[in-house]
Length: 89
Image (cartoon, rainbow, N blue to C red; front, side, top):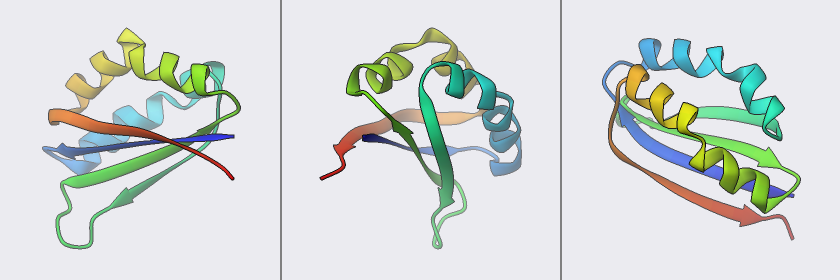
């Protein structure tokens, strides 16, 4: 199992969350099994999302998917996200 993390700043959390929620079926179709959203306790505009995938290639493919980048832009993501992958050991 691979856990993908995406951390970014958002202009408005509620607006961002609406777009994030719209993609639930697309995430599943692209291999994400579970996902969760976290906000920083110090900065409500600092958001981290994790998603679990069976395969690293599926997680990488999701990150490269143009629809994800378009959704991030529409949702008000500011700057470049930080993205990393971790293998369950």
